[in-house]
Length: 116
Image (cartoon, rainbow, N blue to C red; front, side, top):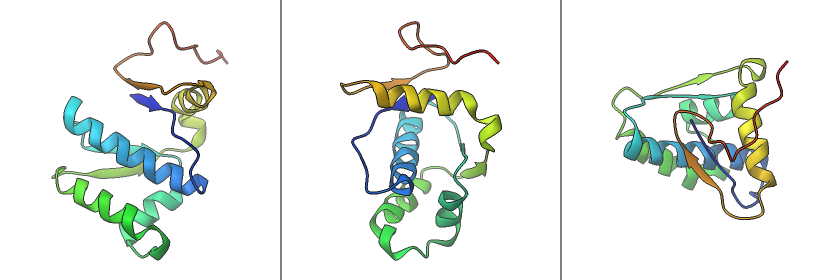
């Protein structure tokens, strides 16, 4: 589990690509994780098809990172099952300074998601 607040990207899809790249780079250092989840179907299509000219550089970076993950897998996680991650992402955007977090549980200084 991790979160980071990025500076504004060109589009929401650019943010998703940047978030995946960041997650992959950090998993190389901190975890044997080979599987990544996202609620962005377009991101999954981009990774599988590689036919998005406006994202050529970003996709090349992800393709290079994929070589470090012999069992790389990216799956779609519906937003209703992704509420915890979505909450972390929205919370990170509210921080006015750089925020980086990687761990197995949410630290006490990060707010908790509202209970349903």
